[in-house]
Amino acid sequence: MKPTNTDDPSYFHKVVDCQWACPAHTPVPEYIRLIAEKRYTDAYMINWHSNVFPGILGRTCDRPCEPACRRGRIEEQPVAICRLKRVAADYKSDIRDRIPEVPKKKNGKHIALIGAGPAALTVARDLLPLGYEITLFERDAVSGGAMRTQIPRFRLPIEVLNEELNYVLDMGVNCRFGEEITSMKSVMSEGYDAIFIGTGAPLGKWLDLPGHSDAADNIHTGIEWLANVAFEHVTSIGKKVIVLGGGNTAMDCCRTSKRIGGKDVSVVVRSGFDDMKASPWEIEDAIAEDIPILNFHVPKRYIVENGKLVAMEFEKVRKEVDENGRRQLIPTGEEPAIIPCDDVICAIGQENSFPWIERDLGIEFDKWEVPVLNKATYQSTHENVFFGGDAAFGPDNIITAVAHGHDAAVSIHMSCEGQDINRRPDPLTNLSSQKMGIHQWSYDNDISADFRFAVPHADKEQTLNDINVEVELGFDEQLALNETQRCLNCDVQTVFTDKLCIECDACVDICPTDCITFTQNSEESELRLDMLSPAENTEQDLYVSGTLTTGRIMAKNEDLCLHCGLCAERCPTNAWDMHKYLFNTAKAQDSCQS
Image (cartoon, rainbow, N blue to C red; front, side):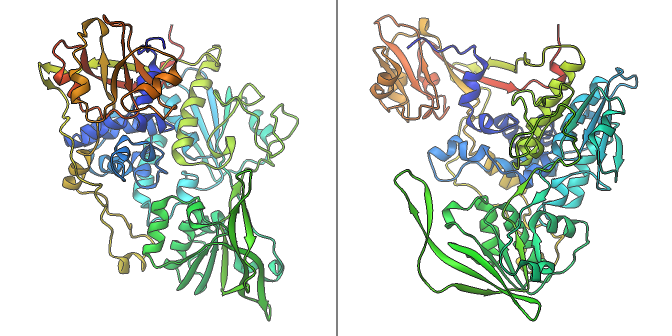
């Protein structure tokens, strides 16, 4: 193998697994260390620059960072990254003096944003400091999009939501709330330099089974029902409720039902428990509120008596996997399950909807009515129209929408500057030694052996009787400190200088995971197997040195490294050193630099 090119910004970035997995690439270990130092506002601002909504995401994020967390390789539970993000938001001071200034003199460019969800607000946040005039269209009377309409207040308090939305809106967005767009041609006729569409995936799916027409008044689609609850158009539901679906929307629907009148609430899912799409913690919270989940039940019909919905019929199935590895649901032959109900909520998916975009504008859609986009720039087939969030590629999550917004803002800025938007700006990186003495480092590598700390919850009797009472209380400062000590600091990299190595193997002896090997060079597939601990995860690169004095090379299994620094402490020649690697994706302000 060739020596590893550590100058490639993606190499060490990929080793910081949590940051690599985050769609917005938030510098996770960096803000966790700041929380440990009680520098909550600094930790919040690192998040704010990267993911825009730390307080919201600290409560609602889908946490793609946590399954990637290196801590999960040495014990069952990763670091509670998401809930530590909330700590930064809960304990920060006033940040308004840290928000970028918006110039009074504009740059002459005017951008329209359609939809006031996380993607569009991220575009606004990135472009306003560059002098753009931003006009935001939103059919509702308030901003937030799905963050407001699809996340219940017992998970996301209204004051937290409004605070972080207003940080962006107060930068100077021209808000046209309560204005539903019915014609893209009409918007384009206003002469905007670019248009960003972030209208989400607003159509909920429902099941048109026998009995539907007779029971339609008591059959609801999940996202629309949650929106009606959020805006207080719906304040009650029947005592017996069936929620169809196994995703996060279903969990929100069943838990909301329990708070507005539902006494006997059940979640019914076609698939098995392990195949449910809901986040494990969302399922746990529903079960903790005594909501049963019935798996392998396929809905067959709504049962109506005397014009009233009284039950649903389900076929019981089992899962089998065919020779091609595809899942099949096979009827068990048992008697159908009849489940009584007063209301049914269908939380079985959602989809895009663009009836307001005329099809003669040069904006192309595929056969699923999803816009045809450049996946790097978010530009549509019309050079001045961009998409992001769920409107771009279908339903996803808040942090992905934020990432789309950042990238689209870069594209819009480059386009308005006459630049080639396909030539993306490089990320901002910094690699600096942490050495302070022979065996002293400027970071704490005394990692806690504690298991993951549980987030305290409010009393169930209280939360089930008030839809606005937040269930999770968050970490206090001591619990937060304890949890930060579980982080392995995987952004502090082991950097090897081959010309200093005397091949004493001291690093090999001290390494607790046997991730360092001195051996003969070979092809990657062979080298991976020849290491002291075989490098079986091919998604993580090997760190390979140049040829050493004896003709051997150093090969390090990055997948197993705990970033403990013992190799650098033991090395007598400083061939190993610990360098902190900071990586930030380029934002609009970083593009178009000569």
